[in-house]
Image 1 (cartoon, rainbow, N blue to C red):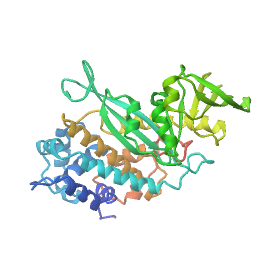
Image 2 (cartoon, rainbow, N blue to C red; image 1 turned 90 degrees about the vertical axis):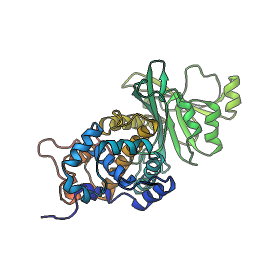
Image 3 (tube, rainbow, N blue to C red; image 1 turned 135 degrees about the horizontal axis):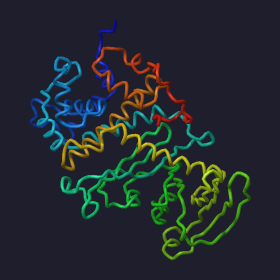
Image 4 (cartoon, rainbow, N blue to C red; image 1 turned 45 degrees about the vertical axis):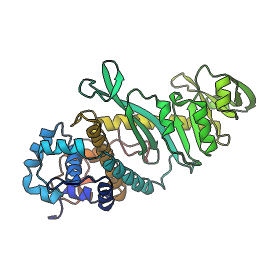
Length: 389
């Protein structure tokens, strides 16, 4: 019989503790703190994420019921909802943001050898945002509409493993296209985004940085065709053109040539028009790249279903951002565990297993590789996907 660490402790062993301590020191998270450290706060909030706790009282009751195991979980302070609430309100959220970015770097290294589209060695990113509704009277800082509050998660997803590499949290009023001003660009990478991000001045920055974008064209775009490339219409392609913009503002913002690919989807009956600054890939690959953008929509759906980011344990902006960054840290931490242990189990199944077994003393690999006898896991059509919907 295994008599070692709790499963919760084995999961937390994958956390870069030294990096976390540097983050705490940088933002003075433990300044004048004697009994409930930032690590205690993170462990309690991580426990809440994994076990689907709904409130601070819920966290307190569950952890106190296992009081004799808290030391072995790494929690040294006294678990009290008021203490945890104060920590979420006052401890700088950037501590957990930097921890998440450190975990993201680790996860991207682990998944770097995976491929998403076989003919592409370059990194492929999907960019989109999701809105989390809040009550304006309770969260007055999260302005959105006159009677409604909200925050937005602008997310850049690395499709090799579905790892969120860039996350920008804003109020609900910020237009999606403004997130491009905060997003770092990587030379040679492909950025796939919806037409809400079409701003030709901002898109021209991609070309200047030697990065590639694939987006949908707006219906009112004004352009002049320079050259038409031959296409195989049996594949659904309608045209593959090199164009120049002719609108005054668009031409000024993007003076160079663009590629316009028109594709008819026989399954849905829709005809889509794509714009890109890449002239080398086959036109059908451009359409395939845009289709991969749906992965970021699935990511948003998954985290809203599996992480605690719709019910918040605090009311301040700092408390909300702290909870979101810890939730994302837990997601990436589990992704690291999945890759390190070479697990075939889906992310959803892993979290379900963890939610009921954190206090068990079982080898982590054995616990997470168990197969359900009643409901076999659905085969995934995308072997690189971390989550199963």
